[in-house]
Length: 171
Image 1 (cartoon, rainbow, N blue to C red):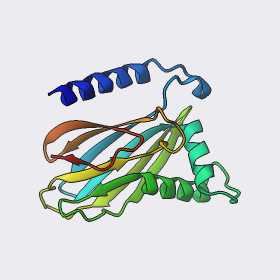
Image 2: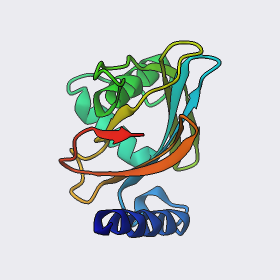
Image 3: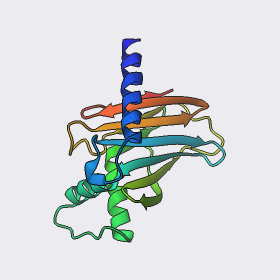
Image 4: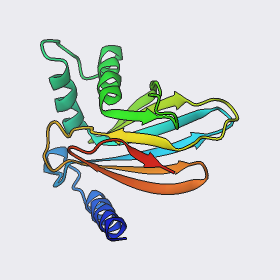
């Protein structure tokens, strides 16, 4: 009960702070990502759309590929972003098997980037409990907060991830 209340308060404060963010990327007061996770039973997929500040993402991607000269757009950049996202965002099925993530697009609008990844879970199958992990940017910022909002299996749930958190189960 106390843990659920703490999660709800933290989530509410994070979302409130996110909505009050100034338009300049370098001015953002908190380090956070927000992920929307949805299932599509007809297509047999689970899709995650991760919203991240462009400057934070750029720093993380460049640090994850030391010694490589990367442009900040184009196919090489998108491949590097997907590699970084796949190393920090994880989905596991009800048997504990890692679900392979594939890109469904990257979009930038001003100071924000939306990274879309999806995983196949089988057409027409009921999506059992998933385990989710999100350590994106935690290697950069001690105060990093990653919120995952899900609409999987007909129920809505929010998970909060901070540095050191492991996979968490969605039911």
